[in-house]
Every structure is written in structure tokens, then in C-alpha cells.
Picture 1 (cartoon, rainbow, N blue to C red):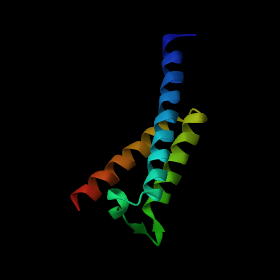
Picture 2 (picture 1 turned 45 degrees about the horizontal axis):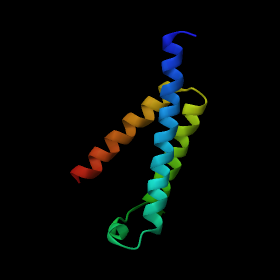
Picture 3 (picture 1 turned 90 degrees about the horizontal axis):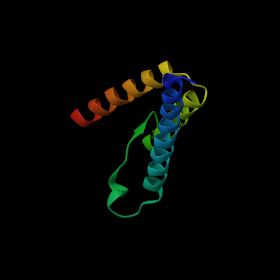
Picture 4 (picture 1 turned 90 degrees about the vertical axis):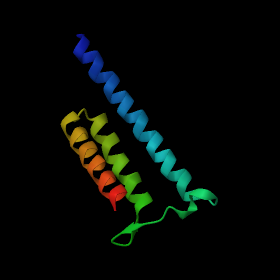
Length: 88
């Protein structure tokens, strides 16, 4: 196996692990009753925490099926949305 192939495998594993960490963080936000309970928002009546969990599930799915172009596209869109939300 070439070095590029090994790097792609490790990249996919890293993406999956970071996605799982993101899902865990969002789940912890849903059960938090202390300082993080002020984090609220919705989009078309759906809580942003659940949209975030779905988003990370889609990223993990694309990483599992080795669709790196779609993963990059979703991550770029996610960064853009976060910048927009921070500015507002």
C-alpha cells in the first residue's frame, strides 16, 4: 500500500473520531442543566442541536464510504455557517 493510501485511511479514521466527538458534545449539551443551558436556537422549528447531530452523522457516513470530496464540501459549508452565526 502506498503512503497516500495509508494517509487516506488515517484521514477517514480521524474524521470519524472527530465526528463522534462532535456528536457526544451535542448530546452533552442536550442534558446540560448548568451554564450551557443558555445555548438555544432552532431552524424551521427543529432544535439546532439535533441539526448538528444529523450533520455530523452525514459527515461520518461520507467518511465511511470514502467520499472525501463530499466531506470537504460539508466541512466548508459548516465553517461558513459558523462564521455567519458568530458574526450575527
